[in-house]
Amino acid sequence: MLDEINQTIYRYLRDCPVLKRDAALQEMIYYALGFCNDGSLLSGGKRLRPLFSCLTCGIVSNNYKNALLYGAALEMLHNYTLVHDDIEDNSDTRHNRPALWKKYGLPLALNAGDLLYEISLSAAAEADETSGKSGLRRMMKMSEYLFLGQHRDISFEGRERIKKSEYLQMVRGKTSALLGCSFALGAMAGGADEKTIAEFEYAGQRIGIAFQIRDDYLGTWGKVDELGKPVSADIMDKKNTLAVIYTADKNPDFLKKWNEYDGSSERVAEFAGIMAEAGAPEFLTEQCRRYTDEAVDTLSAHRTEGIYQAMLDELIDSLENRSK
Image (tube, rainbow, N blue to C red; front, top):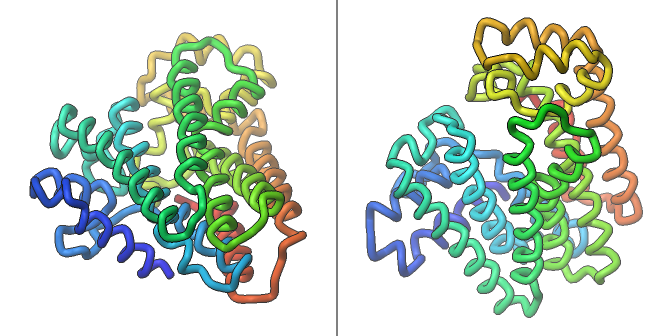
């Protein structure tokens, strides 16, 4: 299934008329998606969004192939966000290699990211033409919430204090909306009714919240060689992660130190230690489990005994306990 997902993405990009007009731009788009020019893989993400789409489609219809192009569209849209995230966060690396903007320059990377977003929507429109569904409309509505979530995330930088409720609102846009759409498009491609699609979407959204919370955990207590980026970055960038929010609620002295912190690497261990002493690792682990359980409970009404269900169960479990 993963091979077919990668082949679907690569073929769509290879056959894209506008990319055929400029080899350098085509190479940039390939690079952003983790492909060499010949379609072999450089390195890349986990392809979670298309995997979720294909697995939910398989659960609903016992055939995942109807979700392949929708999943490819979602993966391209996701990677568009990563191109822009790296620029907005001033991140030099992505997947253990230079970020697109570091390799090709900021102006060209911005433009390539914009084009990748358009290509992703075109792929969804093509899938709609074949299936008679309305995946493009769902993707565009989801994008609005995704942009809102990113706006909130950036706006939180420099704020002296963020409430947990504000954090969750941000996550529901930035991470949760896209994963929810992955589940929804898969169920839609499989022929599910609107009630079932909504339930799959809700479950995907809960998985998305759990995914971000686990990201926050790894951003402070993960291993640099597994993550492919500096673990200290979240602390040095003074990101208002859930670990920071939780510790500030538990330890008022921490908030004063945090707001006065200049982002120096020498104090990373100090802040990680304060957060650990406050119980932040345990809290984040418990919250990740809570949202995962809510997703699993929602999906229980649609459980099957087939291979797609088994793979989905395994994938959800691996996300909760992942190390990168």
